[in-house]
Image 1 (cartoon, rainbow, N blue to C red):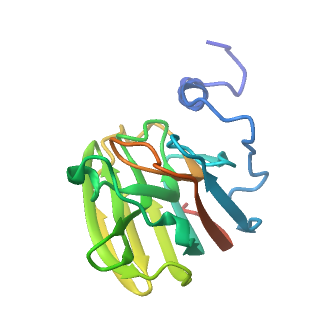
Image 2: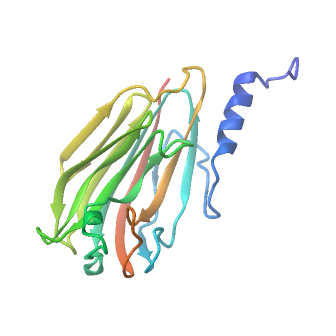
Length: 218
């Protein structure tokens, strides 16, 4: 294919993989994926009877066979993130906030999980990730509404980790992708409610100090 040119089967595979993922209208691409990047602070609004926040978006594609991506931010949940689900069994379902994903979010991805805990009167925060299709959900800590929490996320071709206020959970293992295939990874800059149920009322979540560190692994 394309004899005598730079285009190879590896380039074609990488291109096809990057086209599989549907990008939101607000998506953007990093000119240099091997630099630290500061992103604007954002105030998420999850409307009543919706899952997805406004704004929402996918950012910063990185295409590489070997990669190391890190994300740091602080988050504060508004008083209106207190809620009661219609079905009590859904009260513990995780919402999701910021993270990384490959083209298949239920195959390989990592995000901050969150849920209102009526018993503790706090927001539970935890690890919510998929590694080669295996889902891990684990509460790490709880914070009051109105209080800033410090979050760090790491995603690389050997697994993923997430820490909240210094409490860390790590899952290591193979992504289940052929070693010669470049992997498309994206920054998820969004908030999500639920679970089985949609937001019972409008909710607000503030995020500040977003820094993405995309290290080239050679």
